[in-house]
Length: 235
Image: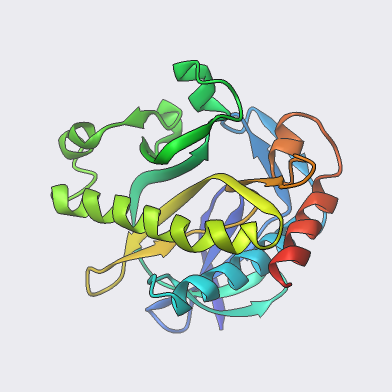
């Protein structure tokens, strides 16, 4: 049973339930970019992200990746395990684009020689700055170096599962953002979402962008792109 609203972020609302260990995540139709400097609304986007995330969480669970996902409740709601969130965004990159090309001058579209994993401090006031392991320890974002290594390992494991999955559906998994939390036993589990809001997908044959870059770059047809990703995920 859905109870009080506990938290509202850019893409989701989190509600308490009548069971302490479980929450309800409600996906929103809002669109934001550039630290919410750009805002929009796309009716039905939340439901698409919820359905895509549910399918991918189920895929990852079947392949041994622990997640907060329990089950889908409606088109735009899922039941999730309560977790203490780790304030680190784990960004996994297969191809250079976006901020990586701006920071390091790597040409856009360059296939990286290995999977790159980056940490960002999840702090809106500081605009989510990139950090290294030592920064994370100084800020006490993790208890020890082993936790940071586990975040990297899980990020690469998720990539190893999702990259060939999408390749088989003619989608290139360019990069993606993951968030993790700790369940009541202290185990690190994958949380948040996996959707076109948090991933970059390029069509393998045309190079067409099928993710939130369509909103960031004013390309249009945002909902159509998300619908196409869901269609391919369900193949």
